[in-house]
Length: 263
Image: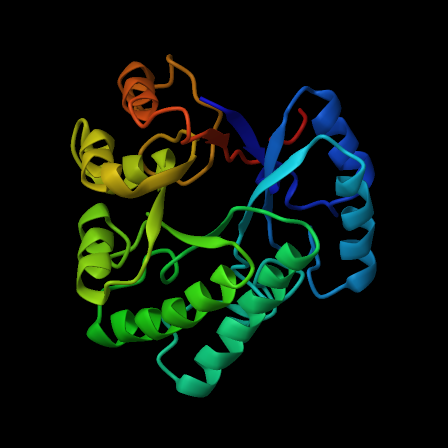
């Protein structure tokens, strides 16, 4: 399996060519860029252009782009209007949300990538038919916009009532949208609820998995820890790695970690 890293680990820092140089020199061949404006300001032509020139001269490839979760530069702390959620029921606000995501997708016109990683709703969001309808309208539009740029939208299992493995597969079956999945190991662990719950989530999603987010936690907090075999209440990594490898070589192991402050 190919090994990829998400720039989520550096999300509190501006994405610069110096940072990309460090990643490339570490022997990593592909990355996923996390679209947070304090990290990658997709609205800033100067930052985007700098990255365009760097990628043209580098062997490092852009595998995927994680869709923005907030429209501000302070991780949503400017207020609720900064939340970028495709389940927004108000039509005018939902149009603004999809336009925000399209701004990020336009990067594909300059730096090719294969997938856009998209959440359905926000963490902890409850299920509602209105949310499902809003998500359908948004994803139908985004899938067309992305497809015109040779990008495929992947929806991710996240800890809410709209994005469990069962709900995602039901959503695709009901809407007939051309959607596949990114399987997030840490989120599956949080949502599994019982021993081997993450494995159950995986089995439900297996046939549509096209990429991954690999990280660990204690089953309580979504803290994006590095996978280890000795973490109490962590994932069973022997089992999980066997499951991930069963997807074949085309599905990568993509680490999505959180920065650890130096002691």
